[in-house]
Length: 246
Image 1: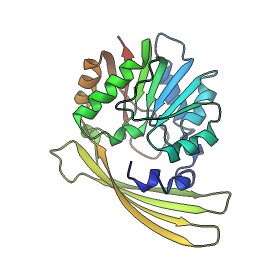
Image 2: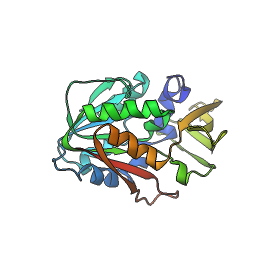
Image 3: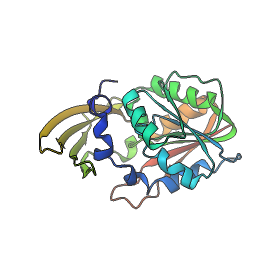
Image 4: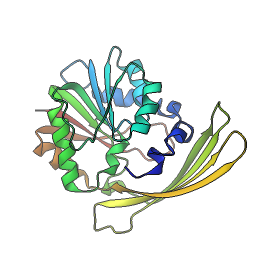
């Protein structure tokens, strides 16, 4: 984990990406998680980050017990403060084994950091290992090959503690023949005393065809379908994948 966004700059995450911005997508995600044969009483989220999406799940899946996993201890620390009743585990979604199963598994946009087919295979094996028969997994990559268009995005907020942050994100594909593309970020971070820091960094993200996702999940024993996201956000809907343990 080398990205500053998730390590030494992690304390800025709630300012760059406030939890309330996830409120709109939570009902749709929760609805997909409830499409299985089992009631969702336990939910495992792989790559939970700062816990922003997870913080809305109990509202839409009442009584659910959350187990939240991330590779960054700094991001888990943020999630613990936001989700104090959840179990938090520092682990790698590609290799972790908890030796127990859950009613549902969620992998949000942290899935983008898997860059090769082998890494997708590893993730699919982790999901299958941790999902009860009849349970549902929802995978939410930001991009698939068929819908990828280079572009820019921006955001940020002003925090109650006096800090403020803004970011610019520029996504593009240096080589369409491989399995990853790139997001370049510029962060402007303002302290309460007015001191401003400028930070730039580049992130690679996986870019795979829909068929690759379906093949990977099927080979792991998961029956999957692509689902067009329903969103009111000002962006193109993502292609999500809903998989059931066969």
